[in-house]
Amino acid sequence: KSNDDQEDEELMGFSNNSKPQTNDKDVGNPHIYYLKLVTPVLLEVLWGKLACEIMVTDWEAASVALDAVKSGMESLVSARQITPLKALSQRTWLLHWSLFVYWNNSSNGGLEQLIELFQTDRYRQAITTNAPHLVRYLTAAVLLCKRRISKRAAMASASESRKLLRNLIHVMRDCEYSDPIVEFVNCLCVKFDFESAQTKLEECQRVLSSDFFLCKQTDLFMEEARVFVFENYCKIHNKIDLAALGEKLAMNKDEAERWIVDLLRNADLDAIIDTEEGCVVMGGSVQSVYEQVMERTRDLNVRSAALAQSLNTMLVDARKEMAKKERLAREDE
View (spheres, rainbow, N blue to C red):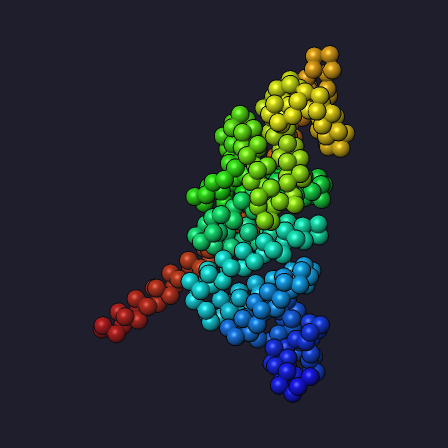
């Protein structure tokens, strides 16, 4: 290895195995390969590192590189070393590059990371401003891992699912974009139009099979979409005809019955199948008062802290303005 190469590695702050090279106790940021300082030039190096990891399909390393680019970029934004317009452009590119990383690493929590990134305020702004077409991938990710996140949340499963969908609908309303996947969720959660949702579900299969990132998830998406239809249909009906439900799920009566039996076995749904009448009878599960109170007050501390901070900022600004007026008044005298 030449002396120039060694000097370049020392300048960048990381070696080929991405371990820190420090001789003192003052190490750098562990999220940015232990770099102590990020400059616009080093940010380009981090982008190059991310591109290399994507090209060699090392998705674990690519996820680390993606976080490094994100942390380095946001540190430059905080230090005002890049303009807000440049930052918006960089965030938009990061959202697009993250599709390669997260969709190819979906079995190791990639979709959950994608949802977290896409629903962060700054990146959500980038989607609504520059890349509304990315709503398709956010919508697909929410549908694919909604039940998985709910199971991990245990007692708060219902509220976690509602929170995911509520945040998704907020993003959908902010974006002027539509395709069968987005419209499918819109028909179910906003319009409660099951006929249109059935049509969109059939269109979804064609869209998924032709999408570069989603084609491998077609079967799983269709399964989760049917569960989603079933859950929403059960919310507004006490008794459901199997033939009608099968039509909504794009299945015949026998397939629908077998599918629902398997679903009721593995899911926590209060329902039974009446084979004589050929229908599903729903139980009377109602959200308890305790659950309603817990859901409404879950983010109370965060909202209170944000409100207190806003009031404090207003008071500081008012005092500065008052002091400025008093100074100007004394100068006039």
